[in-house]
Image 1 (cartoon, rainbow, N blue to C red):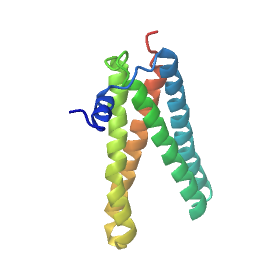
Image 2 (cartoon, rainbow, N blue to C red):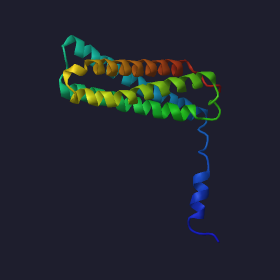
Image 3 (spheres, rainbow, N blue to C red):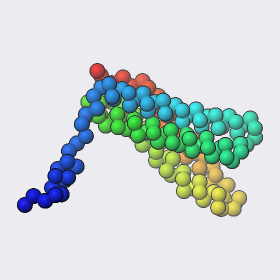
Image 4 (spheres, rainbow, N blue to C red):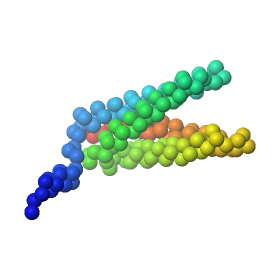
Length: 156
């Protein structure tokens, strides 16, 4: 018996069509651009924070949220490009994917202590250092991922 739902199941089981090399290169370029903007936004925030001895809450929130959105966009485009069967086994892609995983894990691990720092008393100063260390490792891993991706030249 063929029901209305049987066609939908067959369609969802299909794998996505291959991107093709021009699209893969375009998505790599978009990911690199968005990732570079994210890193520059964080560096700009840090530079202003050091020079002005603190940044206004609204400006800092805007810059950091913008950096997060750009970083997520970069990861989305790059992960899709890396998933392409033609390049998925490339050693540079495997390394870049690992660094992206480290950056994502570090950032996610920094969220909970970062929220707790705002609620706990000053005696939990060690937690602030943990959040800074996790944030720094996320930023370094993200930068390493971008460098590996910039050096990656997919075989045409």
